[in-house]
Length: 303
Image (cartoon, rainbow, N blue to C red; front, side):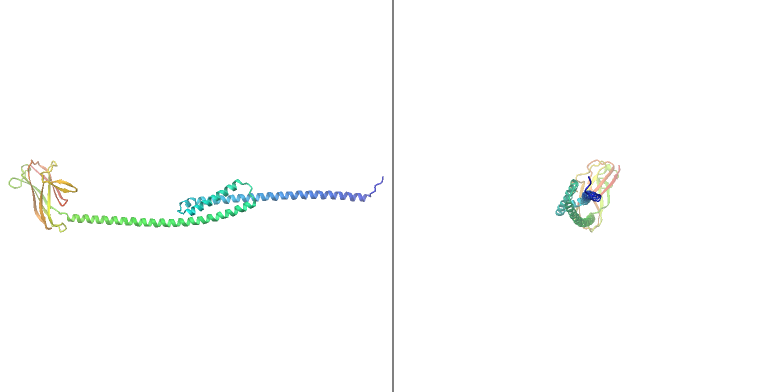
């Protein structure tokens, strides 16, 4: 049976079929390529977001480190308002740090919000650091001023002590200047005829002789001279009563009243009648008046 179509028709039909197949294949390939490109773009966006999230985490960590560096200074300053705001900002940094660590895939919108919050916190940090530095400078100035005042007070205290010591020295010198002086003190054993006795064991009296020089600084008037004679055994001779001295009461051997006018008084004598056996050896003679010990001399009496 002979075909109704010529060979040319069959060729045309074949070409049409091939064209249709090619179009179908092209459309399919284009669709797949488009989907693949979209997947690549989405992956790139996710990678970009992840990278920005990592950068944000790094910025938050850097801010957190800066906050930590100034934390001690913030706590030391005496300003509760600044410390409260500083702590609130630091807590916000910790909150962002936890969010960036725990949330793995943040949206573009949230990343932009976090970037704005980080920029705000960075500005707050600079502001608080400037305030802390300003307060630290003020505190340093106050410390320096206080140190200067303490130094001045110490210098003044030292000066007061020097003046006080000087005044005390002057007072002591004035007091010593008022003290009576005695010179030419002697201790002489006497026999029963009132003559000098070389053998102390035969003495009937002991005579103490001395001179009071002129002293215009000593108050004039009646004065009582108290005599103490101590034997070689350390016992006080005689019983002439007692007198006040350095807050206590001191016994004496004998006493003598004089009228002091400021002029020299020579040849003053005080006698003590021997009423016990005297042994040879070292005897001590002491004279007192007006609360002062005028002299203390040692004499060797022989047998």
